[in-house]
Image (cartoon, rainbow, N blue to C red; front, top):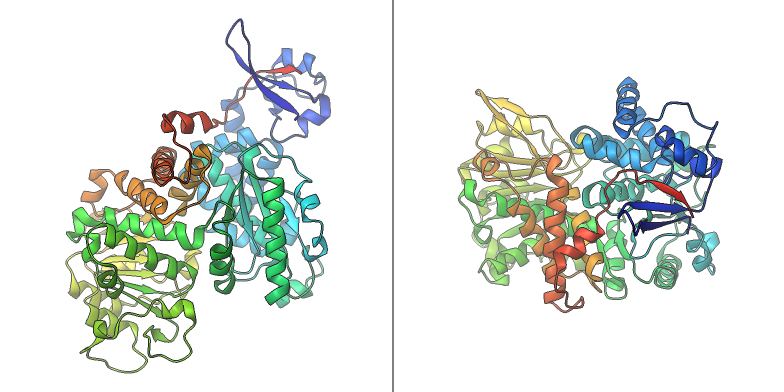
Length: 566
């Protein structure tokens, strides 16, 4: 260990006892303070002559970062700059994010991270995280042991096949685990040493990458079938051996592998899939928060989901659970949620349905007597016949929610809930400005990517972002704080309820269903407390007398501590 947190027994001062000196200290992003090292620290740690004379405060450093950041002419350039800052000085990087959440989070993560992943091999500067390839079969324990991390870490792992809405990005998908874990730290205060980004670089089917002479990844076609499954099995076993106290978050796997991996290993290792479960918790939280203004309880919502991939299936399943918790039966709930894919409404009699999609089909009675204009049953017919009150898009098809579709929604209910959630912004099913115009300002709108406020008839509508950052950092913090052995469905519902409870009444009165992103730290703490208590109540964590104190003790603040030689 290169440092130890300590407290002076005489003065009570907290400090770090560091075992590195001179240039090595300046090269450590976790320990480097740059020109903020004091004169005493410079002398004691061999830094004299290696830094400019002025001893800066962190506020002075932030002013310099802000000026350099603003000189960049595109969000991709700003993303590159901030990742470079993280590679030099993690404390300063996270302090900058904390103080500039609304502006910087869309640059560090969605939507800009999609561009960073697409151009990964061309903007690459410094390695971060762990890459595991088919060359590492039989030695994954050795590979994972190559980097040291603190106890109770969170791992975000991807196999890069379905990155946001842009598909297979090969090794470039590493931008997702790095970005997600940055949000864990800035949102929930998880210390950077407890974060492990991992790319399972099992090849790519992206012909542009395979033909690119600058591509950095494993240059072959993707592992499939038994070869892929045995690869994942060895990886999970290696994680259990090297990081026995870790929480694992599956991220941006394809529809065909995401459910399989989650179902196979959810009880073997504490794990969850943010695309399936985190997105679902976000949507459920939004439906609950919309209740005061829409006048429709979650058990009475009639929901149409467009997109039957992992996100759509996860959303449907958790809404069913939420409806049951609100007092209806599981059978009734399943019939109130209708799901469409690229071939129209999913119904049991449709040939060629996968086992996963078959579970999304309503009973025959649910659509009996419908007036249908054509086959397959399209979105317009579903909205009309179901009397839909909420429309959720996870299709990745831009513009899918047309003026006609939204107008039909508006005939069903006074306050239609419309959530075009596909990322990045260019893949959104509709723009908030259009939805608000088409409903004459009546719609409650939330999106997956950030959009600016919309002014309609003199009223300004702030567009809530269904940003999973409100959910997954709190799940991770709460589960790790109490050592949860599994992530259960009721823990996810607890997270959704905690998030909904953090939407201030003044926002609800304006039809807004998510908090301001600047409140994410307080929200994450409340989500963590709810998740930890639920884990304890279900017996998947040991009983704890003071969950809140355990969580508070786990939260790291991005501030400089004094250093002393070890």
